[in-house]
Image (cartoon, rainbow, N blue to C red):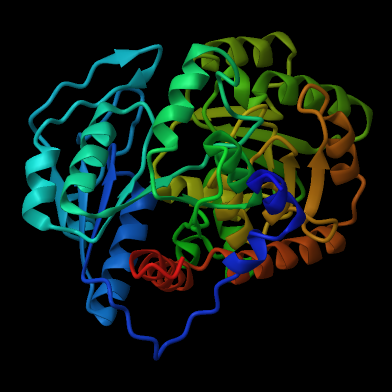
Length: 412
C-alpha cells in the first residue's frame, strides 16, 4: 500500500498519537532547528522547547537565516529570545514573486561546530540554506527532518518541473515533521516512499489569548467602541486574494441587509487588497458595519478577539493558519474554510461552522447569525477545550523531543 494511503486510512497516523512519558530518558544530546526568520509565535515555541530540552538534557540551537523578510511586519524585542538564537548574518536574500530565498553559506561550518544528532529544517523547501544544511548534516552523520506545513490544497505547483525538483529535494530528508494528517498525506505523496513522520502541531501562546470571563469581553468592547448588542465577527489574516476577504465582505453585506442588522465584520491585517476593500466598504455605504483596521500588534489582535462573538477565516489556501488556534483559546466559535489545513483538527459541529467553498461563504455566515447567543457561548467553550487538548505548547514540545529521540536512536 502506498504510504500516503496508509496515512489516510490511519495505519501510519495512529502511531503519532504520542503519549509523553515523564520518566523516559532522552538519548539525544544536541538538536538544531534551521528556519528563515523569527516570528512571535515561533519564538514562544522555541522558548518552551528550550525549557523542555534543558529538563531532558538536550542542547538546542536555533539558526535564523535572516532577521526579517519583506512584508513581514513583526517587531520582536531582544528580550523575546529566551533560546539559543544564532543569526546567519552573512549571505544573500533575494526575493522573487514575494518569496525570499535565503542563501547563507556559513551554515555548514556552524553545523560542523555544533555537531547535532538531528537537524530540523523549516521554511521553504527551495531555500538554498536548507540545501547546504542537508549536505553538511549528511557529512557529519546527523539525521535530517523537514518541517512541512504543506498540503494538497495549498501547493502552488502540483505538476511540472518545479514539482519534480521539489520531490527530489524532499526525498533527501530522513523524516518529516507535520502538524496534521493532511500534511502527512501530502508530504509522503511527494516522497513516494514510507519515511518517519513526527507530529508537530502548530502552537500559540494559549494562556495569552485565553478569555477569562464575560467581563473581559465587555471591557474590550468599551475600549474599541463596539456596542454591547453588536454581533461581532472578526477575521485576522493578510488582506490578499487567497484569504477570501472580498468574497467574505460581499456575503456579509448581503446577509446584513437581510437578517443581520446590528452585526459588524472586522478585518484585522494588511495586504494588497486593503485599499480596494476600503473603497468597497465606502461604495456600499456600510462603513458603520465593516471595519478594515490594518496591521496591528499582538496585544491589539488579542483585544479584537476578546471583543468578538466569533472568528472567521474564509481562506482559499492556507496550509496551517495560527489565527483560528488563537481564536479557539479565546473561546470563540469558528467560521472556518474547509481549505484551511487545520480545519479537521479545529472544527466540529460543536466548535463552529464550516465554509465548504470560500467563493460562497454566505451559508456558513447565515448559520452563525441564526444561532442563539447561548449556543455560540457553548461552541466557544468547546473550541477552547479542543485547543487545550491539542495545541498546548509544553505538551507539544515534550512529545516532539520523544519523537525526535526515537528517530535518532533508530527506533523510528
